[in-house]
Length: 307
Image 1 (cartoon, rainbow, N blue to C red):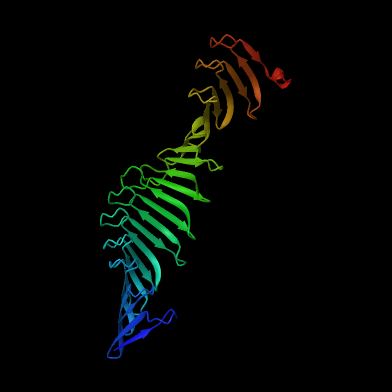
Image 2 (cartoon, rainbow, N blue to C red):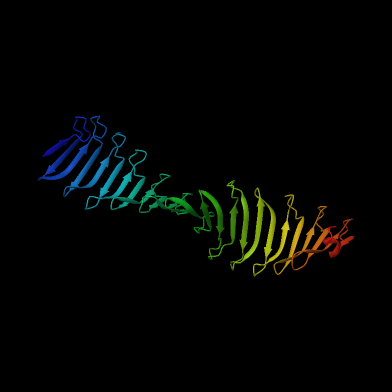
């Protein structure tokens, strides 16, 4: 027994239903009204259990849908290139897509795994970007928006780099090479989203801040060094970005005590400024002939008078 229907209202039969013992057994459908069937569906207990599709009508099945006992979509298979090989697999719960696996390099093995939240938006995407048989990047989403990326950059199957993202831009990288749960370095980027590193924090194996690099257009111009209590010890500044330190800031218990400046670029200081506990300058010395010995001294009184 069979039955025909016009589901599009164009006065042409596009769907044919087949019945067995009064129960719906299968159906075929022509969705393009061109006289060629492109959807085949099997039924049990009058509910769909399997559906095949030839979406581009090249006589190659490029889509297969599997339904559960309640007629809800459970799994899907897609052949994106219509070559007779399924490259994309979807997994559903109560008809809603929850996971999708893809074989992006067409080697017969999945290398892309996506998970979806209750709203059908991305939750995570796990990828084998290097096509070496293991996951080397995991992207995390919140309400469908990317906020964190974990990356295995050296191929040791350890996610040592975590990128934090705000407004679709990376604003911080956290690097933990030895995977001890403590960052080895934290890299901060410019707020103007030019992609250039602004600040890099380096940490010891115990997780304390060891040094901080400030950068301008990707070049380190100022480096701060810290002790075990994360108190400043010294700072080194490359003011003209020539790779040489011109100014050194020396600290005691985190308080600036002395500034040393090399003005003639010979690698030796020729200007010294000493500060008190309030970080006010109390003494200034200059080496006028650059022999390493101060030739001129400003005392506290002269400095205060504005000399």
